[in-house]
Length: 135
Image (cartoon, rainbow, N blue to C red):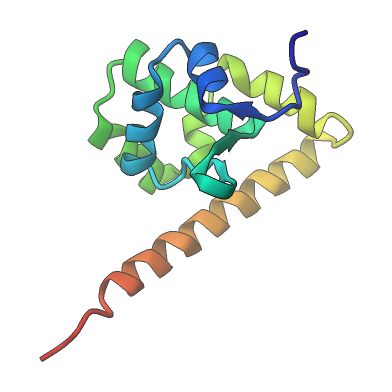
């Protein structure tokens, strides 16, 4: 029995859906701070549908559009997750599954909030990087 579109995916299911090896997904987690699957006891990963949509966009940028890892990192830093999702075939699926009851204005507002939160996280990450021991 196939899982529904809103079901969480294990790393093996996500890797199969994205047509990449599992170790690639783990590697991407180390390179892209915005890839954060849920982790349960023992570190077992569960990917939400929105995680799969983001991973699909990363895969498209790296494999189809020829971006480098640094290029995707720069794109994310400058323009946020929303830009990564632009023109992604999975974006429409994710919006249909999760944002169907919302109108266009509400969706745009949520994307703006997400971009602001990511920018705030980036600032915090930068600030925490500077809190090392001083001597």
